[in-house]
Image 1 (cartoon, rainbow, N blue to C red):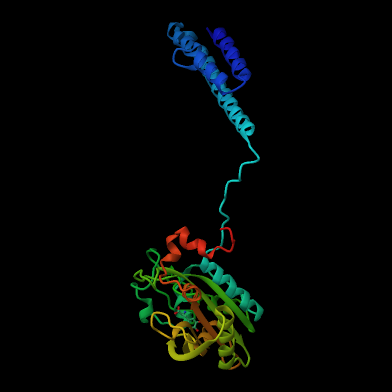
Image 2 (cartoon, rainbow, N blue to C red; image 1 turned 90 degrees about the horizontal axis):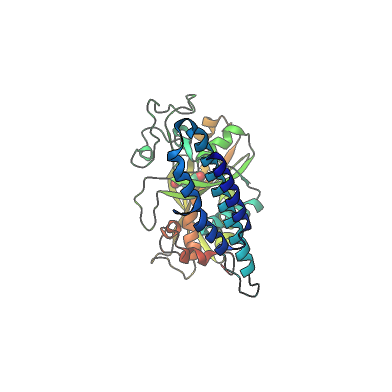
Length: 350
Ligand code: DAH
């Protein structure tokens, strides 16, 4: 029986190798492998084999089945490829493969990076999963500040981590959370290096906002920080106005409106208007927060607040993209509708 199996196996393997096309291979399959084919017929006789021989015969049967299945599949693949190659008609028009393109928000981010690079800013980075200390304490936002409310922020579920005491108290412990702002990178950078500092830090932020036309639970910000001797508010104004004019183009007017941020003093919100243009019935649109670095922040990171001054700013990249392109709803950015995205394709054929 064992010999019979081996010899049939050889015979079938030869037949498979010799099948010249898909039809011939199918004929081999029907003759040898289908329900009434030679192989199943032979293997049916296994039941008549004496018990002590069964392991040997069984093994031969399995080997035969495996070898035949493998040979059959590989011959089939070969024949299909050959048939496709034979069908190839070089005169047919090519198939269109849509080229990918950067997401419109990332396009604005990259354009912003380019402009700041020309102004001598370096790129800095920090993690999305942050420590309470870097997100709040060190940015002069104490534990009782409403921004720390569990309602506003995503905390990671980690039992046993105590709320932080802050950097000044020597603590970098505390709960972990999804960063709510890229201002965290200010602290990380200043702890690592000494002035002069001139960085931008683009990245994702997270907040427990109700999702609507102008809010999402995740969005991009770009942070900026400049620290040196003799840095003034005039530097901040000049840099930001130049930047937004380069990015948004044309005849823009700016307004630095006094505001409050915990880590800058004085602080401003920057409003911007384009002559003769209104968005949603409003002339002025708020585009950025900014201010002079609060001396308390310098104390937190161990900088000499008598020697250094600095400015910082932060803005939402989606909002700038909306202004630049006149997009009515933030949700377009995350719905992945190609009809929307294609309009921002940098490839003309995309
Ligand atoms: N982090 C602020 C926010 O998310 C934005 C901001 C305001 C950043 C003022 C700054 C700044 O660096 O100076 O609302």
